[in-house]
Image (cartoon, rainbow, N blue to C red; front, side):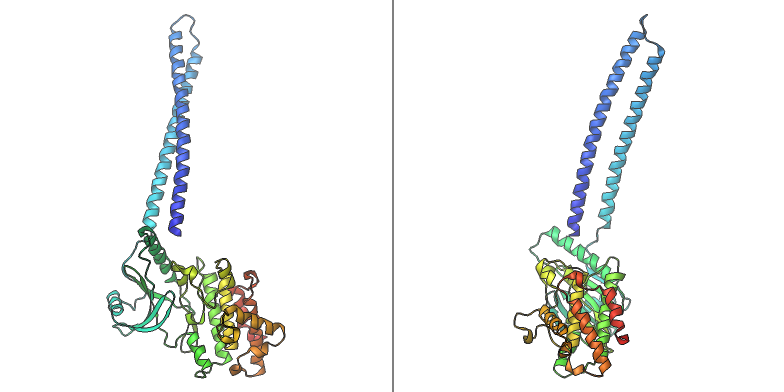
Length: 404
C-alpha cells in the first residue's frame, strides 16, 4: 500500500510540474513577443532619431529600461525553472535512496545471536510448537545453548506480479524493523528475522510456560490451579502491553490478532504479547479472523485500537468465567460475541456471580473485585467501538480493583 501511495504521489507531483512547466513556457513565449516588439520599436526609434523630427532622448532611455526589465524577468524565470527541475531531481533521488532494500539472510537485533549460528539452526529439524493461519512456530537451540522460538510465515504467492511482490517484501521488512524496536516487559521482542526467496522466519525468546490458551485448557481439565491473583496479574499485564503499543509507540502499533494463544506466560505468569502486528503484515491479513475478532472487522473490515480492546475484553471474560468463546454452551455457530452477550445479560440481570469460574471463588473481597472486573469486560465488549474504553483508561481501572 505504501508503494502504491509513493507511485500515486510521484505521478501527482509530475502532473503538477508538467502544468507549471507549460504555463511557464507560455509566459516566456509572451515575454519573447514583448521583447521582439520592443526591439522593433527601438529600431524604428533609431531610424527616426536620424531624421530632423526624431523623438527626445528620454523616450530612447525608456525603451532601453524596458529592455533591461524584460531581460531581468527572463533570467529570473529561467533560474526558477532550473531550481524546480533541480528540486524534483533531488526529491526523486532521496526517495529512491530511502527505499527499504530487499535484504537476504539474517538480520540480527540481539547480541546473543550470531548470523551463522542462526542459519545453521534453522536448517536443522526443529520442534513444532504450534501453527496459525499466518505460519508455524518452532523451537530450536543455538550452538551457544540459547533456546529460541521461530515463527515461519506463510510463503508469498508466487503467482503475484514481481513489482507487487517486491513492494510487499519491502513493506514487511520496514514493519519488522519497527517491531524490533518494541521493548516492554509485557511484549515478545523480535530478536532477528531471516528472509529467503519466498518467506520470512521471525526469531523470538522462547517462553517454556506456553500460552494463556494452554494454561486455560489445563485449568478446564483440572490439571492447573489458577487463582484470581494470577488471573488478575495476567489481565493487567495484557492491558499494559496494549497501552504501550497504542500510546508509547511512534507510530502507534495495533496488535490485529490478540487472543490467548498469542499471550505467552513466563514462570511467574507474567504475560507477554506475541504475534504483534503480524496479521497486518501478511497480504491476506484481512481474511484472517478468530473468535476474538471485533464485530466491526466482519462488517466493514475496519480495524482500530478499539478492535484490540474488544479482543482484550474477551480475554478478560475468559479469565473470569473460565469458558472458551467457542464452547458448545454458546451454540455451534457462536463467536466471541456470544460470550460477551451472555456476560452482559447476566450482569444486567444482577446475576454476574453465576458467570464466575467456580474454581476461583474465594473470599468475599476477591468476589467483589471479580464482579467489578465483569463490568469492565462488558464495557470492553460493547458492539460500538466508541463505547469501549481506551487501553490508557483501562490500566488504572484494573490496577485499582483492590481499592474498590
